[in-house]
Amino acid sequence: LIRYPYGCIEQTTSSTRPLLFVGKLLPAIDPEIADQDKIDDMVMSGVKRIISMQTPSGGFSYWPGGNDPTYWGTAYATHMLIDAREQGYDIADEVIDDATGYMLDQIDLNRNENQYGYRNFRYSEPYFHYVLARAGKARKGRILTLVGQLANTTDGADLEAVYLLKASLFLAGDRRYEADLRSPDISPVKTDRRNNWWFYSDLRRRAFTLTVHQDLFGTDPSGEPLAQLVAARLGRSNSRWYSTQEIVWGVTGLGKRVLDSSSNFKEPILKGNGRGIDGIAPIAGTSDRTWQIARAS
Image (cartoon, rainbow, N blue to C red):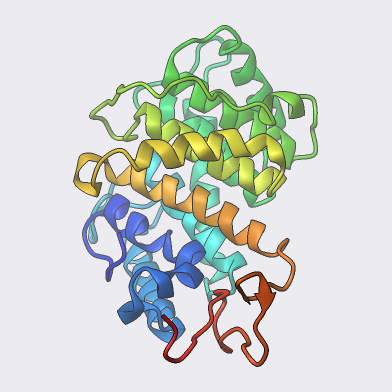
């Protein structure tokens, strides 16, 4: 994923999002792209390409120059832009305002109080609500309607939707589902994948849930079993086996958890044979806790 972004809205957003949260970890992974200025350039390259896909309606097309917005891709891109703005990147307010305005319009156009959604909007609307809640524009009444319609679901894609909807309520100040949000599904990951416009897989669901849990509760211990589940599953095969969505949400959720956890460590002491080594300090200018010892065996 770590490269200059290119391609469609999903590929471009997927290439950009991890850089927001794992940039400080890159010196231990790929020193050639670890320079913060280069990371910032890569992020803004992705942001500019994404903005080039925004249509006059405010939604995002699948490719640059397109006229028809894609539902899920719009939520995905807008979510990343909100995160980038929170990380200090220069994202114009009107870009996000136009995108959230499009999502609000589509909710009004497509909703049916007696049935959950239409076409692929069915699987995009819960994500719309989460992104809108992140932007301070939650529609609590509609969210509660959808939660009620999905109360007895066992389908994985709908379980992902329910978690997003309950998280949306939490962000809007409604804490009635907090216990559910703090108890994510940690059952064995299934191989379920669906070739569609919302890119669902069961592993994506767990990694996406981990990211949202991290946003809501930080390093709360309730998220650790899910983090271990996602990490173990991603460690089973090389990257070619996984979908882009599985990697991007896994890297994002785990990256957030590692970075949040690192602030809890006390200043480390380097020891040799059980004793502190004098005159050795952590290398300055890095976020890693690393030391350089000349001629050490």
